[in-house]
Figure 1 (cartoon, rainbow, N blue to C red):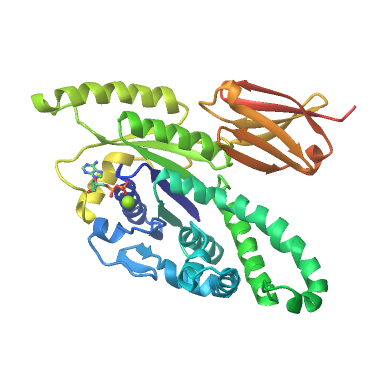
Figure 2 (cartoon, rainbow, N blue to C red):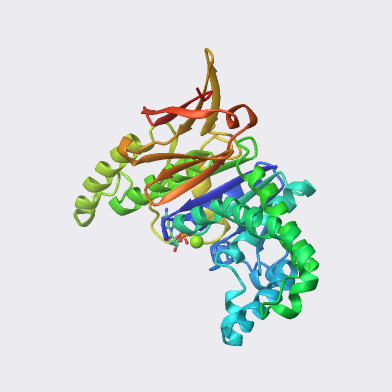
Length: 389
Ligand SMILES: Nc1ncnc2c1ncn2[C@@H]1O[C@H](COP(=O)(O)OP(=O)(O)O)[C@@H](O)[C@H]1O
Ligand SMILES: [Mg+2]
């Protein structure tokens, strides 16, 4: 199965492009599912058909899915949610607030992404097209596996052994209720599923992320940031889609200045993402709604190309051996030299980039070595490892 993720700033056309892409895939003969991880679903509006929380047939070879986050949370998290509510309530937090707090931010979107892995496992579709939440939320979400992993390893997993031995003595002593086995089992199951999902989403043979943008200053800036961080987190972006481009034949004086500025920003897009193919989509005379409009959009967007193609095959993180030395290479376009800090902690390397940091669990060969040298060349951060003296 191929997974195609479309993300970008709010309003740039993610939903329209996702729906158009899915329809195009279906018409090329792929069994296709289109789903959204944006809690504000709008696929149904775009496709002008009702879409349920189970795969709903929309056209030949095409199914749509709008996940009901509350149902997913009930099914996957209820036990932990109940425990956390009791825990917070025991600390004097008001009952209703305690219940709110027991659902971690981003969890509704997380369960949507977990569904992808489920379809992948079942080999249910040839292609899954995902209409993602705006860039910021998607980044946070794609980072979630590492975050949740960190908590699980340190909090739940480690503590569990301790809890097992001490709980019989402590239950009466502490006012804090300790989690029972079912809570641990649920958290562990989720941790495992999140890890498996991360593996699917960061496998360039399966998943491609496409950034949708408009030729506008703020949109380009946000997309650049997203691109850097997606690379840092180990995901593969393989195309840029520049949407709402004024066509040349528009000669109306009213748009003259818009055309000049769009031309300038299109050049900037070339300069920023030049290593990726850039697909352009014109601004249509009206909203893009319904199968006919989406079909036309997809035809103009992809031409004779197949959307399931891998448009760029680079892996953002590599380990290479040169002579006796191992190098860890991270592709970090647009990052200034001064922005990077490295910190080694056990078998983890922490790369800090502005306010975001990334934990990289080093493979065995590097875990015994120390980072010796870091340099940034042509958007590639190269870290040399060597044995400690
Ligand atoms: N190329 C385009 N030409 C004209 N209207 C467009 C185009 N792309 C998107 N739209 C319209 O812009 C609005 C926002 O698009 P949408 O796909 O919902 O964006 P997002 O999902 O990124 O918020 C919708 O009304 C949509 O029909
Ligand atoms: Mg949308």
